[in-house]
Length: 350
Image (cartoon, helix red, strand yellow):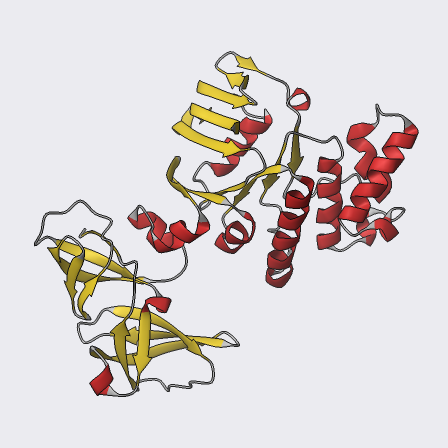
């Protein structure tokens, strides 16, 4: 059953339409994510759900109850929705314990204390209860913000780019920790981010947004391996397009040879298409007899355990391959390539 429904909603800002006909459904207990570049409308959608932005069309429903429509907007504090902000928004003059208690001050003192202590234990900060926000690291402050949002026992929680102020390693680790906490507590969540690593770490379902539209709402696996739009393919992960020709329903002729897979385009047989190749779609070899085509190493980016190689095909097109860093191929050397993709993706040529 859907806990949250956005039913063809529209939002405007300073007279400009941010998005229209925006639809999504989030099931109870699900962790979802709106992923897209800056300016795509994802934060406005989150603020509309929270009640901070009015909508100009459609409906927002929580537990099948209308909380927003044109001319009617339930106040944010009446929506039973928690919010974790990008800048944490902690009260600097209040202790960690009092920050967590902020939204449950109407409860009896004993109940406040019990709930705050339980949540601080859940987020691993029991020993910091009497500290102040400035005495904590960024990751610890974000855990406090999460505990504070969970304290009123909301129906769902919204997270607005919550890890963007943290370094990369901490961002990924905290994304996984937050996912575990929300799953353990049975909380439904919606994350907004421009960082696909955060989205993949936290989301059961991901909606990729561009220019006010959700281009694909799907699992992380399908978003990566079966992108439904060219933008989704290009925005998620790394990869490159090469030219091809559709010779049969699931067979494409390319400079890498005839390759089979699912072509995500409604093209007549014989049409030119662009095939999207990810680094993990390619096998490399130094033996030309085992390769479909030889490519030249043009660039390489060392990433610790792996190295990302930029390889120039004879046609001039670039493709990418991710290899163990133990394989140290010098610039301008030749590598043989063979395509091993089982879920090939293609789009009409542009």
